[in-house]
Image 1 (tube, rainbow, N blue to C red):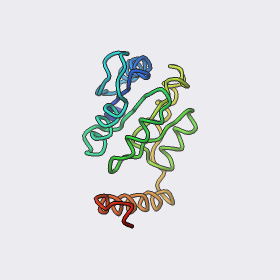
Image 2: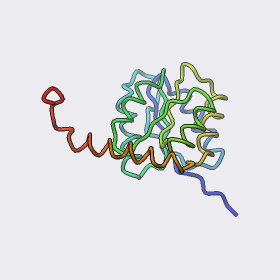
Image 3: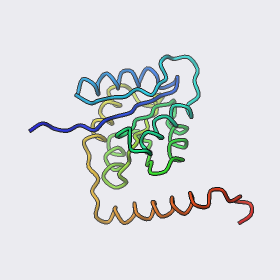
Image 4: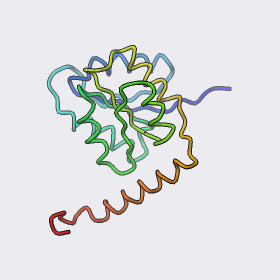
Length: 163
């Protein structure tokens, strides 16, 4: 029986470029179909541009799962989590990656290039990709997140100062 591997969309800014290239090569070698959303070099680049490319694909259901990399992972996380249906999780170790999938059904893994070496990144991504969503009591919590998302999105044109 052939194992079906999820399609991946990966992106990074300049700080994450080298790690992105190494991780992408490792994932392709493992048989993943990886779409690279940039950047294509280590020249200064703005992380929101790449976070938006990946998160938009995940939000629309066309990108499989996503991986984002910047220096700290924080900017990518903040940007990606602005998109509907995106659950981006900054993971600094394999246990956080496992729990982000098991309990939160995270669909974008965010890595911090300045805190994560290549070997650790491959390990974190491998655990994240191999871990299924547990469901059960966690499904109820995801439904609550979706309800909050629907409420926020339906009122997003309202000025928060008016409430």
